Length: 61
Figure 1 (cartoon, helix red, strand yellow):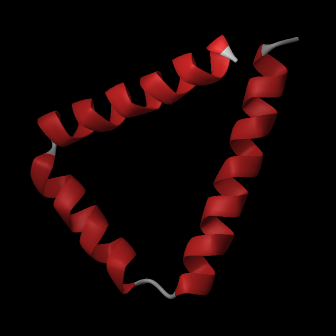
Figure 2 (cartoon, rainbow, N blue to C red; figure 1 turned 135 degrees about the vertical axis):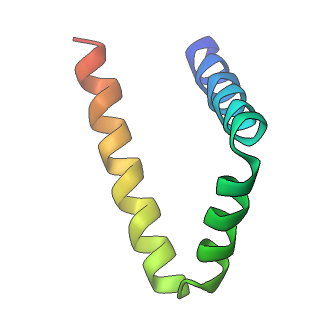
Figure 3 (spheres, rainbow, N blue to C red; figure 1 turned 135 degrees about the horizontal axis):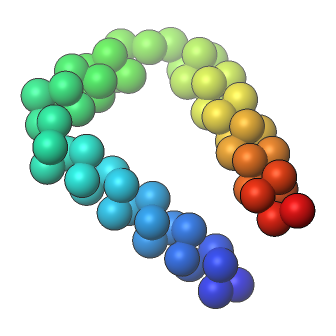
């Protein structure tokens, strides 16, 4: 469970760093996301989650 909290905190840190370093780029990215159809968002999120699970699994070997 500690690993889960650590991973969550790391994601938040990375996200905050991106907003701090590239605020305009992040605004543009959010604007694009807001215009995407819901189906594409779900498919992209599911694909990203699957890739991330594989990366975590491989890193634990």
